[in-house]
Image: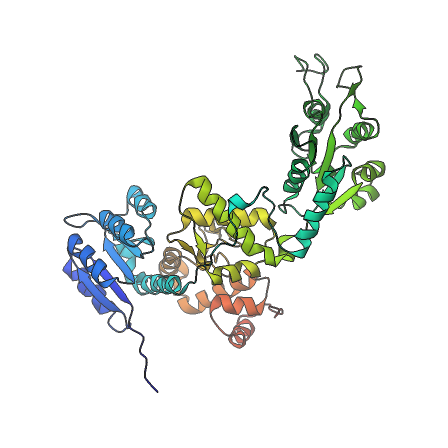
Length: 490
């Protein structure tokens, strides 16, 4: 049996101070990392091209060219290169420029005695993940979709079939589903495939317009109908005569407006606010809600007769967590659309990233997936999105303040641990504040354990994965610190 040895990962450190380079070399002596040092930026670039190190750590102020110039050249040569900029003077401009050019991180030299090994371990782990990532080839591109509704699951196929059936009629349609599931996209598809497609599709959010203005918005008003009505106004019904009117959040419509809407559905006519003339309009109504309208009827918040008028045909959109097989397709579609809109290279997903996305519950549904990928594309430092690039279930450190008015240590999510700077700051603060006489590691262990349990909803399996320990170790720790933790479901 042959012995296979894994070559050590290589770190190139560039700094004009030889004493600093000696210190770095000494710090990493027992870490199993191969360290190459250089004082000249031109030579450093040649070494990079020759050695292809896993990580480059470079000082801002170098000769003959500065660290930012070296960063730009390295990233041009290798777009996925891991480069960390360090400086004794971290100005706002230098930090922003570094990240703009694709730096993995920017660190002040004064923090390195606390963070050097953690920094390198984190960066080398990211580099290894990137090398091991197997980018997936998109199944479909944005050009292959006529509409923005994407899905291959049985649930979505049923939705598409229903859209095709109702598109040929003028019957009112009620679309139900959780917020962010794509109800307006269904309304647009119904209009697009109908004989009304050459006319207007207008949308109005019934929850976003004050009650005293909603009636005017829908049906228009005459000059002088109320204070501020200086001119006659044509309402949405008149504007989309022959077309389709999408009434979003119909469950929030005031009862008085519901009565007038019912008349329009029954008789096809209405009057402007403050007017006597009867106006006829041929308008196809598609309404949507994330509320249970039957419960609203029981509590006298929604008219039963209007409900049955609207719900001639009902289409229910399943939440994203109920159609996991659509997540990959949706993600690839959004990445393709982002690349087209922003005129940037198409980013790809690793298989591990897809597994992470498919295991996340997506409480914000398709809208959350889209926003997550948009943010990931903005902050990505490579052409392959890894799990660490996805801001899933973030907890904002700024949203929670401790008694001293400073931000506590916060773990963003099960896939987004503390950044290096946050961890270093937490350690430094713990050592220097008044309660610094407390043992640091037990305090951090308890704090991180409690936060991991909070983030995962007291799920021991997920919390143990987040903390990097076994479930048995987590149980013992929970017993020791007296924290609750009963759930063990995956």
